[in-house]
Length: 470
Image: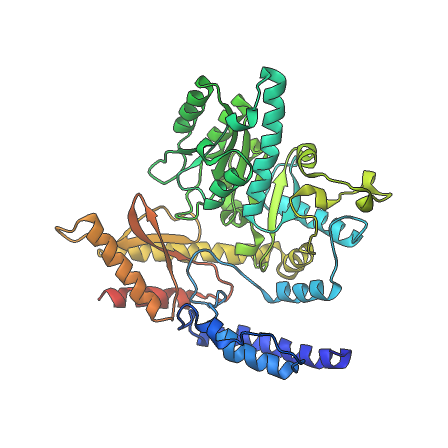
């Protein structure tokens, strides 16, 4: 493609993107397709000759777009938001144009130093303690694995030095809530602890980890000669946005010398609001902390902010400097290839910088604040309707609810009726909600936070739910 053709096609593509953002509300949120439909519509073999850009766009509109779920639709209330804002999209285009490999300072000095600055901005915005240093990972799943690998190396060294334990890696234990994200289980396996070393801690009535149960589990393992290595606490669980109590958990970890990793993937963004910073009370006890600007902070996927206290422990775990990667400045700069699993790194800091500058802290706070207020409105509607019940507290932008049991109904029947309600609501393709199970009870989740969502969309969604029941 020649430059002039690229220029023309690029202008047309930006026009298409702008129209899509403006008109996405008119599209059905979910596609009307069955497994295999898209694949069967595509050629089985690659084209032998080049195809013009017009053909590519026509095929995209004809074959791909009808099979997409539109996460930016204002009626998207499923899972958690995965936002993409116009400033972030523009920065992503610049990133693609630069094509930079940002693995070290030498390969892209501005990328490294902008990442250092934007991560410090985020630390200040969330009022994290000054001892935290940040680096951008791709996802929270990766960040949690990084935390568990670093904690494993530290715990192995400590245990071997103090107790002289042989094969200590297979004696390390990990603790987390029964409502943890599944990425914790995966990280435990990948980091070599073994899934049998994972301890799932009981919950309180708000689905948060019980510190007393954590202490009991740790003491039981110590009595068996095991080595407690990591606690993963969750600020805003996926199922219900439960807030694990970081302060008492942190005090337990400090007392036993255990690495505390805090997973605030979704909820962390809310801490930019002064009135919501209570969700991170006790975060000063954490050794590592992660949240995703690509969920609720209008930065498109992927961009995960990982903070760590002991940078040296991180570097001891991940640093690898073969001769072909060494530069004259290594001793005085950050080479972020040594701060995680990936060697190659995208210029993710650019879109983060662009979004913060475009909206400002006050603009981002206003968006998060109204999302939380709208969620509280939905919670009020649930409380006011005797057919429904709230299933969990509503501290942030997620509302968990279900239809109440009718007289004589058992739990299986209630679950099936709620499953049918969600299926009928989603079948309209006007809104999209998801579900979870809380104590085995089928629960409908309404997560408010899509960039295009207005309060009228929230009202219309609740009206649709109520009408479907009727």
